Image (cartoon, rainbow, N blue to C red):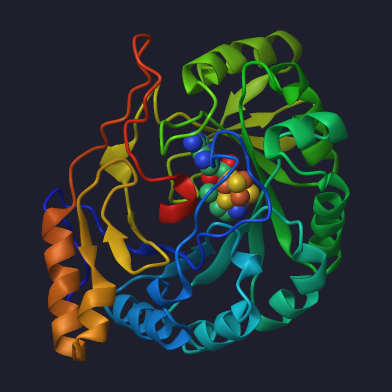
Length: 332
Ligand code: SAM
Ligand code: SF4
């Protein structure tokens, strides 16, 4: 079967799959305080997810990332991961991983390690309990830190993802980087993206990572390194801490030319770009009884429709989101 190559010659080898839109946190840049979530019937079932993943893997997807909402909130998450892990054993998949807020990671870490999950991304914007409660609207920093430790004890490599926020954590970023590096963890900083309506004004919280990098250069020596995780992050090695630090700058730079991924929502929509609205409805096809060849034809159509680049911009003039859907729907 032929590889997935889009009209711009990019090989698509990475599928990110949101397994639920629900979350136990309400991060201010991601969700509104009172979110309405999808009814269960609209969410892809275990079997539907399994079938779709198999179809993508057959076409050359080598990396699968489960995300959400909070993936560990899905009741059958461990069983689902275990079932998907058969593709690791056959060698069809290089990596099965997840992005989590880690509030429940301590309960899952040993199972995930046994299943074959070798790395996880943990989202953490602060080490201060009060700031954590302000950003996430919940008091769960202790659970997150326990989750991080449990994963490390289980032998899972943890990468920390931190959204840079002008008012909430700008001053704390060096401490957060030092904390991660002391524990041998990579850390990646992310600029806020205008996805979904939230109560806060994102223009107000937007912090350019170019500015953050300049501030780091006053205290540390940053050596550019060629390390690439197959994503939009650009890495440096911090000489003084000995750790790796990534920057994801969707707004101040875009790296769409290297994009190797597509995203499937928990309701079965495949978005060819995080920053565009064009999508293909796989749930409809599955529930209409599509056979393997029909699913394959839809995947091929998706490749033809993958756009060259995203449309993000945080304008001075407008705090309105560039896209109506929340990150928790598409999966980060
Ligand atoms: N709940 C899990 C978590 O927080 O890791 C997985 C889903 S979450 C949507 C994935 C990532 O998206 C998180 O690292 C989060 O910080 C990031 N994110 C959410 N909304 C964002 C936004 N508007 N701009 C930038 N990053 C965002
Ligand atoms: Fe939940 Fe993750 Fe969104 Fe925070 S960023 S509200 S943890 S889905």
